[in-house]
Length: 237
Image (tube, rainbow, N blue to C red; front, side, top):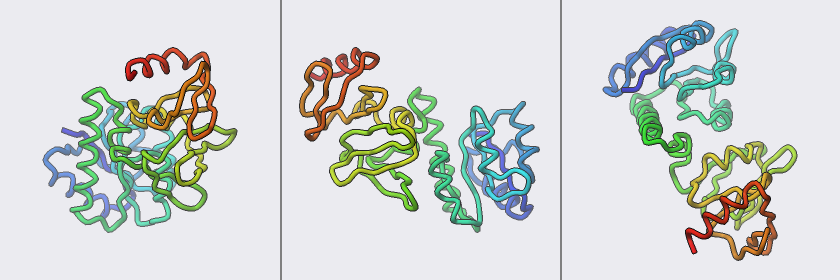
């Protein structure tokens, strides 16, 4: 059973979400709130698994609400404003529902949350299992979102203010941190070799001393990552 709350400053919208929650057997409504401040106080004493969260609310927006939580639960954004979709990608929410929300679409979001919770119970990275469960990822870059197949990724480099994804098609710049890629990409396919580099194991052409060669690019292996890297390499040799 997934314990959840609903937060929306519109009473009618809140009523609809409440009705939807009660129709889903694996969801348990623990509370509903018409303002984010009250919901925040509730979460301090009563942690839940999932929050259905409106974005555009007075005083505290849904985005500010989510960013204020040190250990946020799963979140499904609900909003009448489509332009906030990119923020959902950046904040790693489970899903993004555009009002008016059809029940079928709500049910799909609830199913995603159930998959995520099941992954967590099996002691794997829940975000990776839910958000990047497929063999592709969506990356926000400049003013658009680009789909990248995991098989196309050669390596990823952390720059000063950006992270650069080198692919077989073209390099892609994003504000997403290298750490987020390390924790969310499949550990059997990608490995950190340096504070600034994450590489695809399938794309390694050769390894010599403290260097990995991928597509004619020389990538350093630093001391802090060398032992783990060679452990993985030796297991597959």
